[in-house]
Length: 371
Image (cartoon, rainbow, N blue to C red; front, side):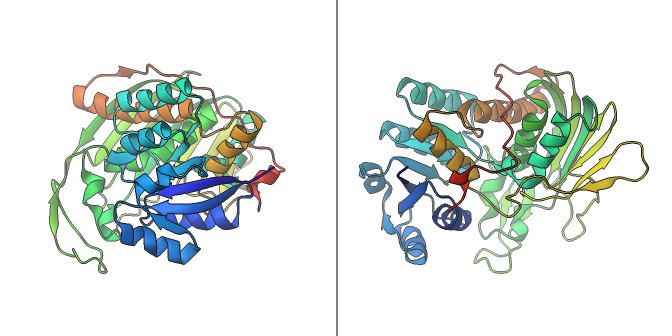
């Protein structure tokens, strides 16, 4: 089967690992061009990876390109993805799909009406660590999962990012920036969410750029969104999970030594690895004493960003289904927005969307995921 020709829009920090994987690892695509609102950023990535640098209009006008990866800032995900779709191309976006539910829904409606595909990060739930967890749950190792706790307690991205201010604007914050990893992992393991109750706070309304390499080092900026949010998520299957997400831990003393996620079942406890990564470790405690580390059943345990895109391309080429799909992305987005809405209103919020629980990957991984 011929490789699909693809382009990439948004040549910031995250583009390097996407281009590395899409060029060197995944066997069903050929990256031909990259673009950025700053042409010099596109030119730098083009020199690094042997691509053609161009502006966004040129990339979208290129009839060879059939699908585009959208790595722009969160507030630009929806408008840029819509431009990609209107150019007749499939799109795979970084998370979140959009920063409003209406924009996310508009993307899905347009794609459906025009026979186009949308995929969305994160695809970390396809990595070896979380796929091992899915296998253990499906095999009944911990019985029926009925509850869980999840924690993302961190200092903010101002400690490493040269331009961290956008992480604290509307459409970002820890909920929409880190939350997608946790929600996509939980929905992939437990199925869709039914309703949510939350409390959110801005504890430090002013932040400072702390990255030593940033030309903006020492500059201050204003926080617009809650940076400490605690939620109760009730899933359609009856499970109840508490989730706490925060950028408020003091650097460098922020390590709270809490699990990323623990799920409690009728027959045991499953400790889940970092949802922002593809690796383990995975632990099970089933009444036989201390938690036991479980060997990972699936490969792809290193940074494999782009797996979900490769899975989508395979679906386009074969007419099959894919896992990091549009319905999954819209449900994840609505969960995140309802977390914030509940915190603002002080009441539980019901979900409007529902999605299918993604199919697990086979232990013998599909050939299209290998170059």
